[in-house]
Amino acid sequence: MQDLVLKDCDTFYGKAQALHGVTLSVSVGQITSIVGRNGAGKSTLLKTLMGLQPLSRGQRLMGDNDLSDRAPHQLNKLGLAYVPEDRQVFPNLTVMENLAVSTFAHRTLEWSADKVLELFPRLGERRTALGGVLSGGEQQMLAIGRALLCNPRFLLLDEPTEGLAPIVVEQLVKAICRIRDAGVGVVLVEQNLSIPLSISDTILALETGRVRWAGPAGQVRDTPTLLDEFIGV
Ligand SMILES: Nc1ncnc2c1ncn2[C@@H]1O[C@H](COP(=O)(O)OP(=O)(O)OP(=O)(O)O)[C@@H](O)[C@H]1O
Ligand SMILES: [Mg+2]
Image (cartoon, rainbow, N blue to C red):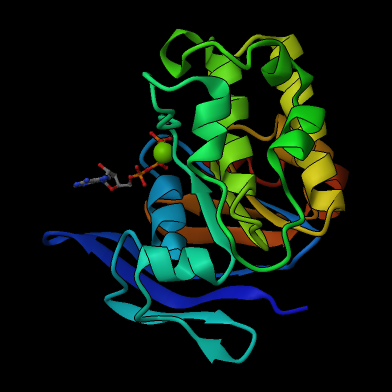
């Protein structure tokens, strides 16, 4: 299966450079975590993968295909789905309506609303509730569910567990592992290491828009202080 790769990428907000020569490789069926402090460039990196931030330099590749110039909707069709930090659930639609608007007819229909409810039983209990009244955890589940209905090969998640109760975090982490087991390549942004250490295959540490360390999560498990310099407070 083809990897999703960013190669030597720069991106800017106006004149301010946000990413400097960043390289990242993501495999299907694996979890790649991006960690780093506030403002390190984690969200920018996800936006750059998704085509929401233009590449000033470097390439976006899927296997041998150069996707550097593709727009977000094209990348979505090619198998990328993105859940932003603010989740963007439709507040005036119910859970089921939120899922319905995202049901795309593309590729094999591996994911359906029923499968999303199986993954997140809580959403089934809340199926007629409006998006706007859901708890943060429920909104996150719905946002991930919506993204899955695009049948992504790669799912980009920006701090999905931020601010959520430990029990909800645990449910989300289990679901992310099941999504990985279904063959999706997950890119997970987290500020700290605890979840990345427990579930990722690969970890990449960013600092001021630069990759400071990237490698197998096992290496960080063996040397827990390895990334302190880049993500410690
Ligand atoms: N829309 C924007 N316009 C201008 N500068 C931006 C914009 N978004 C982010 N930046 C800047 O780019 C840099 C990287 O920001 P980014 O949001 O990617 O960091 P982050 O690692 O996701 O941080 P956080 O942990 O706070 O979410 C920061 O210096 C930030 O101020
Ligand atoms: Mg961010």
